[in-house]
Length: 448
Image (cartoon, rainbow, N blue to C red; front, side, top):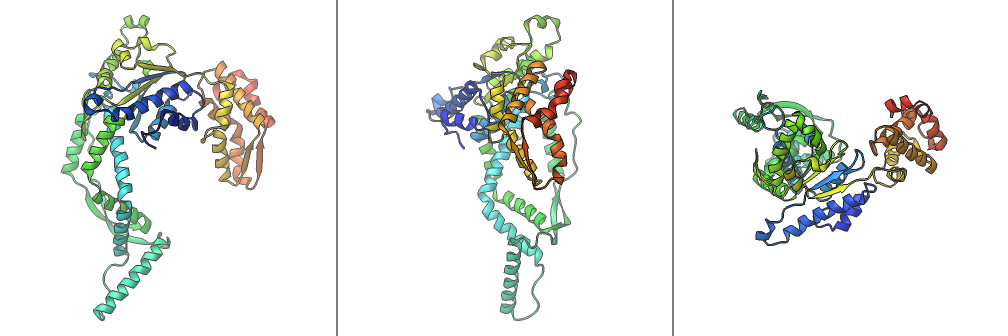
């Protein structure tokens, strides 16, 4: 997929995995399309168009994270999910907020390297195969006429090549030199305020002082081939090009999903207590990154002006207006995700490509057991999920994981002894598996 998808196409793709929440899907689809539109503008105007950051408001388990994750995958964008509560303001022990951009850049580099690996894979495979044959056929041929020796060696080599390609040499062992890492240096100041980036730089410096060494090891042929393939790929790839490509992609299409933003918002009546200094500080530190700043990484400086930030939170005890006014202004778009109903749960169980019913059927299918779900059973599960969410804590679609595991626990345990069996999960089966939990409300709270 790519950024050329229209909003309608993006929503259609998201619908394959996420049920409901149409407003949120439309909003993120427009945000992604605006990125493509911005790229079509003249350069002087392009730099003036800032991303419209989004706050998603809604209880846990309704699809906030999944929408952002699937969106990034659709558009092949570097994506990172971070939790606002993991960060502390400068001066406190803990992670500084700039580390989210350093982590995003690391993800971007890995993505770019993987793509470059794919481009050179054919060439790398050929080179790795030839090196592997050199290991399998060390030395030369017996003394004889030079021309006959060369022909004999060539024939033997081609026979070995065919055997390797047929997988008949995978378990044979070869001796080869492999790279070993130098001593691992742990910088003791990593948890100190502002020292995270310095610690990373010191590690890199020590890494250059103690370069990797080569050591002879005996490996299975297939393991040796993977090492040779990686070495050949690394030699064929231009690492500077990888970094430049990653930086461009992170700066222009990167997405940071900032979860639990509500946990660093301070309700008006609690601000006077003085216990929220760190939370307020985290907001102040996040502000310049969202506004647009330059973050130093081990791959060079990264600008955050056009990175898309999607914040999310339940906002049970606070509201978006409890955030700093400056930070609120940097998240102009807001969308509320709805709590899931029985109908939503039923669709979640049946419609998505990764529906739980399909997952469990595939898992038990690996044991030779055919698992089928009766429509009435799924309605009962959906109804029970809605009831439990209403009576206890509302954890959204995650409730289905707990209920399904409870229903199928006995079957999963016995499946290895039931090869060839066809099991139909009907309403009676669901009710029988849940009767203890249903009867005891206290048990309900602990188990589900």
